[in-house]
Length: 147
Image 1 (cartoon, rainbow, N blue to C red):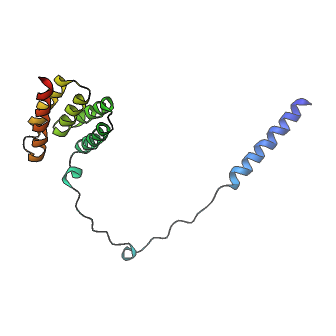
Image 2: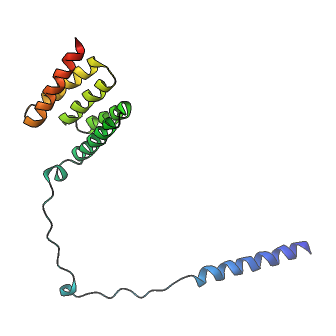
Image 3: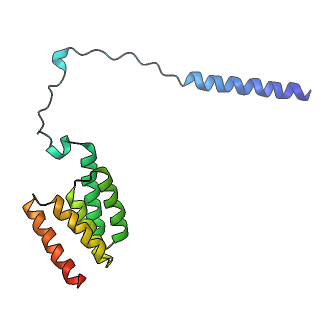
């Protein structure tokens, strides 16, 4: 008697489940095709900057460099170092990473590390007049601390 009761409950449950699932199906008609002349004209966009068109690793490195700079402004040297080292691994010729790594080590009062990163920043940013001046100013600050 007990087996019949469970069998009946099982059949009713399956029936309810099947009804619920099959009742939820929605049949949509296929979309009507638009004639080619009804399609919108392509928009004319400005050309993308060279950094964005270039290597995605370079773009990611630049974004990480900016994050590192912001962390330095917040006084979070250890976090900035982690982010800037990731940026270097992606694109090692980005001289700004070296500059900001030197700043991070200065913030941690590690003059030897700051000096080494500054040396690399000077090497990679020698062609950029504005950044090269920043690197030289940083180098002068390091010399004052090193004595």
